[in-house]
Image 1 (tube, rainbow, N blue to C red):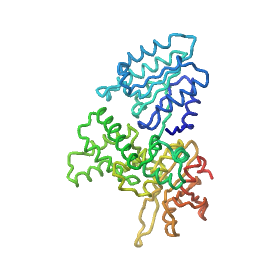
Image 2: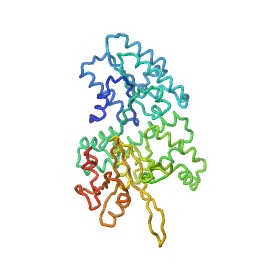
Image 3: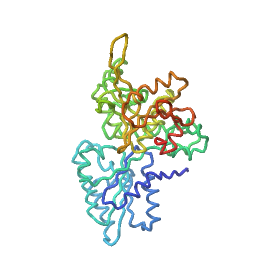
Image 4: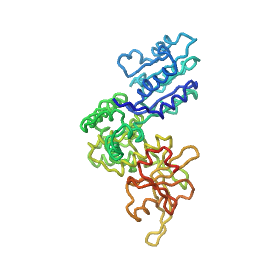
Length: 430
């Protein structure tokens, strides 16, 4: 079994120890949240001299703990284990969303009761609380108010390429091709056979994600949800919206799936962290454009298995990887729109050019274009067209798949290859 030390996430947890806040670890199921909390962080606590009886671990998705799913019962159980006020305790709760039943899921009060339990633990000066959850509703605006400013989030994703490549064991090119095809779910690295990898991803999708979503949201039209996912998987890197998807279904004779239903289904996929939404941002106008948007899969293996590994377009997959990497590095990421005046047939027309990503972190901003290859001058002009029209001085970058060394062209645009970008966390500043 390959052990990957998710050091970036572990360091985040360590830095937040005993800060008087509830540490909430979110992310897609099976991406390593439990391993981070119950193995890596637990071992760290033991190394620091914390005794085992002062570490309370509860996996709420374990059938053995079914009796603890009621918030009041859970609270009583934990209280029974922290009676010695002279000791400092660490409470580790895995998959906290299981303490909210399907019936209570859309009831805000159910979240309030759960967070009341967690806030109650924080009132004990000798307790430090950590929870994991696979549902983004755990951090919705309404729910977070119940933390009273005492919630601290750590979001964990499937393996980044910089985590995946050292554990892969093959060449850089072999690792890159496998990563594009099978994604970065940690367990995938323990499987050597291609058939085993495919079966594992099918099982994850059907038995974990779809079963979980269907049960929690009471979805009866499971085929409609699967068809929607296939559409989203096929349209990675393309602009779309619920109405456009609904029209596609109608043209295929699937009239039962309306735009409002599609919008709701997409929200479920986002809540489960399966897909992420990138909104469009008008760079010159400095405002967001509500629709259409782009959707990216948090793991390419799960995206590819939906399509039977048939739509393997590296151009689109590479763009998805870049998006995920920027999120991994802590950036907020939008799709950029640059409006320009152009001449067509002697007339002045208003055109919109796209920047694949506008990445922001604090006072840093980068404009990034994903280009599989730039074989000639014409392609270079096409890829940099939107970048050269941006009037500010923030760095502009084109990421390519070919293994060319980093260079800057006469327009001041940096061109770097994908592996250099992914394997160096400071690559954007090179």
